[in-house]
Image (tube, rainbow, N blue to C red; front, side, top):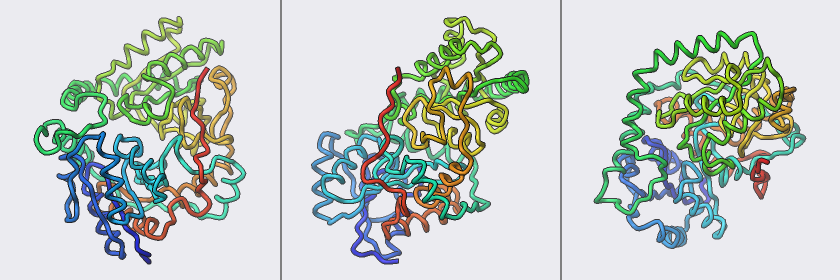
Length: 420
């Protein structure tokens, strides 16, 4: 490896010690690393020297960050989740100053992959959108290899999230100017998980009954996302998922396929604040489709994907899983994988009638190109997963091979989706 005067500035990372370990990995390979903590949660999970704390207001962040980059000759900004308020500003500054902005997040491929992209994700992704380009570039690359032993206990990830968010919520002293990107009060959100946990067995039993009833018939799957997911707010035309739910149910009615059903699945990590079952029931009654629209809070997603006639999503990564299973997929929001030949470009009504299926050889090329250029195998939590991911991320970051080979366009090619 070679550093070539690489100077990295790490901003907010995932709720774990991953960011600190990434810094060590970069420094071990000859790079200089700085870190800016923006909140108490950042500070708690930073297990290394060299970090400074920004305690100013968001309004002053642009000036502070710009000066820091210039004074320390920063060549690369690295941040987790591209549309967080401070990172959105950082991406603009990087463009103005002509330096690299690299974002990372949970992977498009699942499980145990991490997305690592230039600039942004979803609508802001620089990944190619032309099927011919993807076919040509992807067929040269090997199929991704999967390693075992990268799993981690769920409680560990949940604990990290709770510690990070509640530390920020109760911090009135150290970082009192920090503006968290939160839809709900964190304390209220975590309290609402409790009744959902108590109802988990009952919900699972009900889900199995409904899915068994639908199996063998013709149904479409609509996996809901978490309402507080920033991808919904930044990369979809909806203010609330209810709008997407209503749109799908309305199209089902217009399709006039009386034997076709629509199954909504609540996100497994949903906080229980939004009463999806009641919302879907109200919309079903509104369109007089009782007996054709269902909602489950539980069940096996893989089995549902195998049995369904097609999948509707806003921009969930479930869409990528469905595509890999060669199931028809239609996106209602801005998704990186919304590419002709992978996803349906039909109207919702026509999708219900005769959904377009993915092209198998394009799917294969797409997965190969993604895995080699913007996906890193590994995990934010498990020891083995971190080691594998940090070695690969460090190599790509230091050698400027993020989005390489052949998976970077100078301007993001995806347009904002506007529904009729």
